[in-house]
Image (cartoon, rainbow, N blue to C red):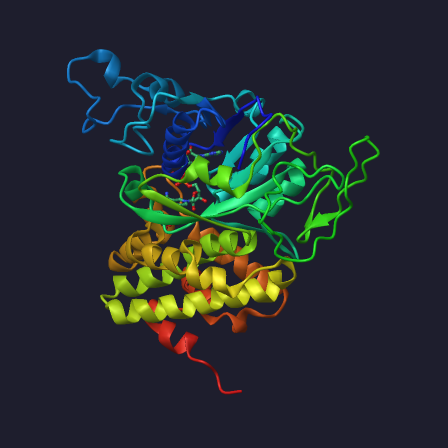
Length: 430
Ligand SMILES: NC(=O)C1=CN([C@@H]2O[C@H](COP(=O)(O)OP(=O)(O)OC[C@H]3O[C@@H](n4cnc5c(N)ncnc54)[C@H](O)[C@@H]3O)[C@@H](O)[C@H]2O)C=CC1
Ligand SMILES: O=C(CO)COP(=O)(O)O
């Protein structure tokens, strides 16, 4: 897409610096360097500050050098040695990744915000940056989780869009972070489907030939003269305030340009418009991976894991169509894209949820305890998602329609044993 007339560049901030947050900052920083006409080279990465010691097994630890054996601020250490020794050890980060411990400062000038942290921390982060970001900023959520309140379930792309008054897309795929960080080939799916925010002057995001909106757009167009009306909803996402068009002096955020922010030779991006399936696939597969881990812990083999994957995929699609059917979700996205089938498979082979669930059965230990011992501060997303999904299904009396999700919840609660999974997921006679 031509960038004629554009003279500003997008400034990108990654909000989060865990295992995946640091990896995606690396990917993006490589791409801002490769695309200097579109993006400012420096990528800010917000770091939840903590004191860390350089591990003795790290290549940065030199015995006898005293300063290396004392606690350091994580953000300062990242900027000094260009490595996140706690959450992404042994991977060099490009020098244009700049760690920033101040959340407000890191986001203040960004036109593109990449949200990438364990989902339980997002509501608090959204509260802190509300009103402190550029009003026409755009977001991409890399978060694999969902937000559940009393009677509704929200994607984090929706939640961030609504709370911050910006458009937010989603990135998700079969992307165990260490493999991506080591530049081993995989695919990912990016959903980016912003509404047309100006009826008279199409925004640069409206790429010819890109007819993105997955479902009927129920929104009030804004006008260029300032008599803009409030956008009510886009694909069902309610915006608390008017969506601001991206000024024309920025390069358009077309699918082509968004892809340039993420695509690498080792990280192949498929652009879609189905934000729901991309977000839900990433969230729900974490529950499925727990089931696979429980069975693997019993010593059951790949046949059992394949059955868990099959049933899990079916429940993902059903959940999407049942609760987000009005938002343009497509079964095809789950079945064909990395964010669906491929993510379930990798997560049931090598993800943290799988590994910790397996160990919890092998050692007969609560999974929270395994998480604490094994993950060095990284967070499991499947356990909280299993509870959140169950809370939502129970409030609608629909738990029995999702037997695998319900079985995982029951195992976490101690109500069932992992070897009961087969009988729990067996279809009941009508
Ligand atoms: N690690 C992986 O292989 C992948 C993870 N994801 C998803 O990416 C998201 C982020 O995960 P990771 O980067 O792996 O995180 P992580 O599991 O490494 O979590 C640790 C992060 O949480 C931060 N943190 C701890 N306490 C905090 C607090 N009170 N407030 C804010 N931040 C706090 C830590 O500073 C650290 O950055 C999750 O939704 C995850 O499901 C997606 C693809 C791959
Ligand atoms: O999302 C992932 C792979 O795509 C990683 O899953 P875990 O959080 O279970 O490690």
